[in-house]
Image 1 (cartoon, rainbow, N blue to C red):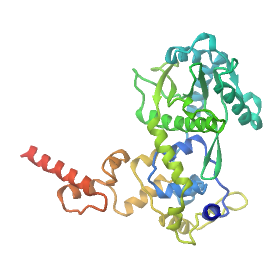
Image 2: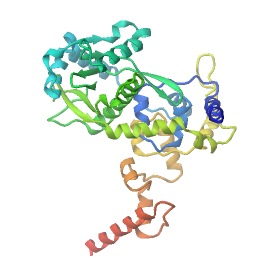
Image 3: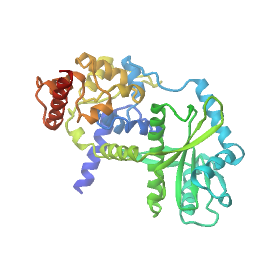
Image 4: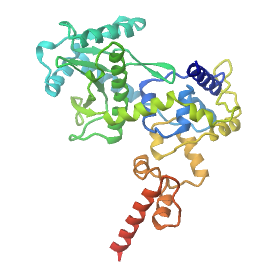
Length: 376
């Protein structure tokens, strides 16, 4: 009974944070972005409450230039249509080469044509039948509809393709329009695609578990399809998303158990935008900014490509004197050391390590000693 009460209090507090603003549904891109900054309490609270971060950023005067250009969207749609033409004939060719898919297994189900209200139920039936190894289980499922629970809200997700191989493994297929030049693609674009594909892998594993099947039937290797060089000829490769899956699970668990973060907030704190009848925010900008600053952010330069509030948090970090912030990967490897000046201070002994930084401070001091010896 006490557990139910805590859960009810938890939901009520998140609703109070959102106020009169309608909750923002999560899509795969938004969920993938959660894994990009798992240590940010501000983002965890905003996403847990379903706050529209884009609307908040615009109201604060710090809009983030996210989204693709109409040209890029058109190009992406044309490339996806090319890969899926004639019942995914081109995709099947690549899957045979990449996964050893036998010709006799080929079948194709376009789940999108069933109708939106039936797609999720139809997806469940098809995946259940395929997982039972029935004879007509099929090979390709085009635009299935999956779900994932995000802090009490159901997110509906639509991967490009789910491929089923007779050996008992499902593979998520992600079709992206960024080019692979001489065997190499933009690392940041690949990383973003891997995070998004990890969301689909987790959603499909959750579905299999709900249906009573082994969730590991869904492979952690996803198929990434991109145009090769400067032509539109598609090329496929396998991307291991185990690391992204681990980070995503931790962040979703953290959002589900926000009790500690909520307990540290003032009772009167609210992120309500107070939208009018036309949906335009009416809350005073200074008041909203003050409410956000009462939560702890973990800004890093990487946020500029993943979070709608990135420019607001960057401005806040600069006002606090943090103009030399480290990238998140370096920061994590240094045990949470956030800036160049902090790292240098720990290295030369002018800054005392905080609790938990003793070991990294020792390593930094050793590195500084070796640097001086080399220079000498």
